[in-house]
Image (tube, rainbow, N blue to C red; front, side):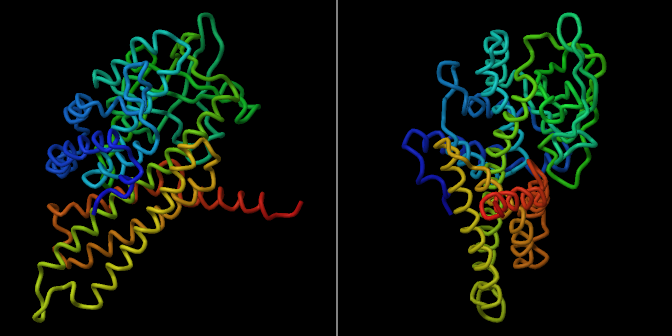
Length: 387
């Protein structure tokens, strides 16, 4: 199965995707199981990806990036998640920070940090969640207090991708608890400065290449020019970014499901039982047909949302639909692929257990299924509710 977004790309964009796919086949796929056994983030592979330009994806060309549009990002996420979604998510998060800082008003961010991020010299992350504020973003308690020379930041962040290796964190904090979301601001936090303390990476059920973890800020002094967005504007910026993230997570789920289906189909075609291949048995054939059907639906929802984002249109509902459907079908359909292979589906070399764990991670990332229900319900009420 070829990537479902390839038909949306130009020849130049397809060449970039081919380079990413070749890297994924040569480096990510053969090593993903070992990274998981070792419970580590493969920094060396991330730097290899940087050498191929993968961390330059969306950074504008005038900042020495590739300047690719959002649809190319979706195609990359789908393609690389076939091998390891956790690695793909880690890579995308550093490139997100590079692309964001390329538009910073602070010259130091643009001239020093962006080249270092794109080259893999340093890594980046975005810190929204906290141990007590996950889906309820407006409830964050990490504080920013105005002081001489800038702002003093204090608090704890958790469930951050790349937390174990990142040097730079786009960090959301509260400047005025009484103001709710209107008090939230965004700062660039440098892990190499005093007042930053990194926590141990989380031991998860899988997906350790994502590098999930947290950090604590205590009397961290952020210079005035490290404020990326002021109170009120930061929350809107974050919500806009979350819509894009929800859709590329859906694309990653499509990659997980496509890879799992391909593995199950290849096994079913080769395995003989009762005188014919497994695929010739109606029960198995229909079961994998259900998988293929849900995969096509997921691809359609993802493509629709991606087109809206690329054209600058409102994608809130489309992103929520794609993310919710991804969370609803990917986990059980990968389980169906495992079941179709019998106990063989559990073997590490097939990668389906890793895909299963990553599908569960995806169900929480950038908004849980329950939050997607809330967004969709709010949209329906706005459109069809009483005046």
